[in-house]
Image 1: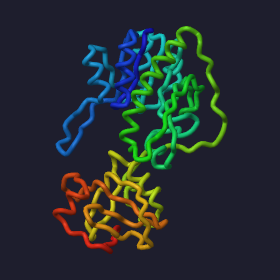
Image 2: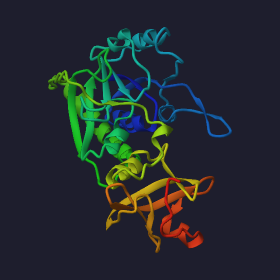
Image 3: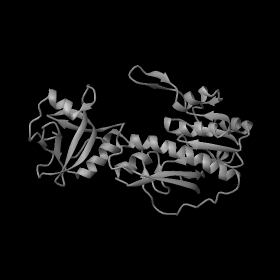
Amino acid sequence: MRIVFMGTPDFAVPCLEALIGAGHEIVGVFTQPDKPVGRKQILTPPDVKVCAEKYNLPVFQPEKIKGSNASQIIAELKPDVIVVVAYGKILPKEILNAAPYGCINVHASILPLYRGAAPIQWAVLNGDKETGVSIMQMDEGLDTGDVLSVAKTSIGENETSAELFDRLSLIGAKALVDTLFEVEHGNVHPTKQPDVKTQYASMINKSMCPINWNDSAQKIHNQVRGLQTWPVATTLINSKPFKIHKTLLTDIYSDKIGEIVDNNSRLIVACGDGRCLEICELQADGKKRMTANAYLQGHKLEIGTKLGE
């Protein structure tokens, strides 16, 4: 099939490569403009652009998709279908209808659950046991189109959103190629999404980082997993800010909420439900990420130290 691909971050790269590997003709790649990154604000291309240039594909980076010549460019490319994977912009009606097979989207949740920008993080934050990728026929709503196929997977007890992100990008790539084959051969039967209220997967932000040690151990564990690798859960230890990168649930219980109850090579903290959580990896402000064991060898943390203060 002749395909216009629209995507921006690394999540979209396996889908683009899978389409190329399956023999589809990628007639154009739309991605967001290069952006300054890091303290030095170095102008950096999106991951999809880097991938497209590796395969010598034509790349288009309009500042705006509405009111630009994007629809005219797409019309001239004459695609059979437009594939959209985390492009990051809302598409106008003229683009949604610009190809015979319309726009097909790869969305990282089991729709209608978690419509919106951060479905992977919210699935982990909420402690879900299962998630997946939905291949969807796009309409003018926000992730409301008919579902063409769903590929499901379980979420590990200690799996972070970053790890799940990587797995779902590969699951989505395979599901996309398989679904396009069925679409091309007329074997797909779109399923209308139920008209129900669903949790909107809003953008993740830094206000979600501070740990409340009055929360349950499971909720805090989910918070730590869900905010990896950005913006990362945080707490205060002896009034100094720390990022908490990795935790594990324990079978230890204590009523000393928020306090360190074990510092013998393991950093164990009591949570609001009485269950204790092990801090496995942490990062002092301005320092490198390290294991708790390594940190304790060079820094003394007393039993009874209350975190978050």
